[in-house]
Amino acid sequence: MYYNGVYHLFYQYNPKGAVWGNIVWGHSVSTDLINWNRVEHAIYPSKVFDKYGTWSGSVTVLPDNKPVILYTGIVDANNTQVQNYAIPGDVSDPLLRKWIKPDNNPLIVADNSINKTQFRDPTTAWLGRDGHWRMVVGSARRHRGVAILYRSRDFLKWTKAQHPLHSSSKTGNWECPDFFPVSLNHTNGLDTSVDGENVKHVLKVSLDDTRFEYYTIGTYDTKNDRYIPDHTMIDGWKGLRLDYGNFYASKTFYDPSKNRRVLWGWANESDVVPKDAIKKGWAGIQSIPRKLWLDPSGKQLVQWPVEELETLRKKKVELRNHNLDKGETVEVEGITAAQADVEVTFSFSSLKNAEEFDPSWADLYAKDVCAIRGSSIQGGLGPFGLLTLASENLEEYTPVFFRVFKVQDKYKVLMCSDASRSSARNNPKMYKPSFAGFVDVDLSDKKLSLRSLIDHSIVESFGAGGKTCITSRVYPALALFSEARLLAFNNGIETITIETLNAWSMDKSDR
Image (cartoon, rainbow, N blue to C red; front, side, top):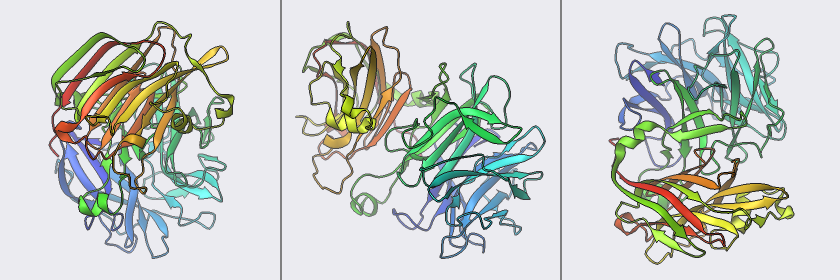
C-alpha cells in the first residue's frame, strides 16, 4: 500500500530458515518502490485466532485515512482458516512499525457450507454506493473455484452474501484473489471502490492446483453483487495470465501518488532444494513492480515496469539498424550483462516466410509449442530475440524470443522464455521449463518489441509493450557476473533488423 508518502510491502516470510514454514508478515518500506528498508514484522502467530500461522491477505485504507490489514489466521493443526484484522499501533509513526491484533478477532469464521481448509487470502475491500464494504475470500467447492463475498457496514461485522462474487468449474481452489476496476479511457489506475461508466473490472485468481494464475475482464453488476466475465474471456486454466512464467500469488494496489495501479508478483526458486535455499540462506523474490492498465482493445491487461526503475540505469549502449540473417548473432557489449535492462525493436520486411501453425498444436498451451519449436530450431519468421545470461561458448543461455506462425489468413505470434538451456548443471531435479505465451499484436507495421530485465537469477520479459509478460528463474553455472554475455539472434529464414536496441547496466538498489 501507499500511505502518507511511504510504500509498504508486506510479504509471507519465514524468519527461521529459507524454506517454507513459520510464516509471519514481513514488512519493508520505501519512498520510491526501488530502495527498501526492512522494519519489524507486522504480524506473527501469537493469539488463539492465528496460533498456527499468519497467512496472506490485503490492506484497505479507510476513508478516515486509517489502514486495516485483513489476513488469514490458522487456528489449529488441522489447518482451519479464519479471517482476522490488524490495525496500526501508532498511526503517527510514518513507518507503521507496530501492528495490533484486537481481541475481537476473528472477524469471519467459515460456515458449514465452506471448506475450512480452503478459505483464505481476503482481498482489499471496496466501498459500495450503498455504504457497505465488500471483500472476497478465495475458496473451493469440490473442484469449483469460488470467490466468497462478504459485506459489512462497519468493517467489523461481516456477513456472507447468499451467492459468491464469482465461481468457475474445474479450476480448483482459488488463492490470492484480486478484484479491481480499470479504466476504458486511460492508463491511470483507479481506486478499488470506483465503479460506473467507462469502467471494467478484473478478477485474478491464483490456482492452487497448477501454481499459475489467470484473470478475466468483465462487468461488475453492483445491484446483484455479481461479476460477469466478458463473453470473449476464457474463464479457466487456459485463460489470460498476468505472467506466463514463474509468477504467483500476485497482488495489485492503487497508488494515489501517481494515479496508477501497481502489480507485485512472487517468483519462487526453481533450483534444487535444499541447495537453493539452505545453502544460499534465502529463497524467493518479488518481481519488479509493474504499472498495470487495460489495453485499448479491452481484451487484455498491459504491464510495464514502474518508471522509478529507470533511476538504476547506468552505462548505456546502443545498436541501430543492424541486420541479422539466418543463424547470425550480435553481442551487446559494454554493459554488465548479468544485471541489465534492454529494450529492442525488431522489424522484418515480409510475413511470407511465417511457418504454418501445426493444427495438432491447437489444444496445447503456448509453453508446449515453445518446447517443440525452441530457439535452436530453424524457422521461417523467427525464432529471433535475445540470448540472456549466455556463457562464452553458449554452453548455457536463456533465450527470450518470438516466432511468427501463419494460421489460415491470420498470424499468430509466440513469445518464449526458455530456461531449458539456462544452466550447465544437469541435475534432473532442477526446474528448467520452457515458458511461453501468445502475443495479441497487429503485425501490419512488421515490428515486434521486447524488453528484458536481467538480474543474475531472474529474467523478466515484456513483449509488444507489455502485452505478454514472462518471468524465468535461472541458475547459470558459467554465465556468472562478468562472465555473462548478452546477444541478439535470428534463427529464421527471414532477415531480421534490429531497428533500435538500448541496453543499460543496472545499479544495485538499497534493500
